[in-house]
Length: 84
Image 1 (cartoon, rainbow, N blue to C red):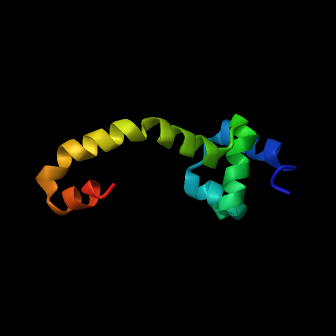
Image 2: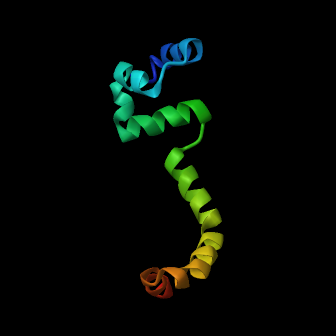
């Protein structure tokens, strides 16, 4: 159903720029994770979880390097990162 009323949602958003809370009240299905993913895909033609995981994989080596550099300052975090 959300797919069939997508043009109406798009028109509402473009024409009146309502706050997010108002959008969630108008279309409560957007509070459902799978519907949010589907809406993202309708707008961007990208799969949200796959896109997020791909970007995380791309940035993970640099993030781990940064965490390891900062870990000695935090104590317990250093122990956890040493196990990775």
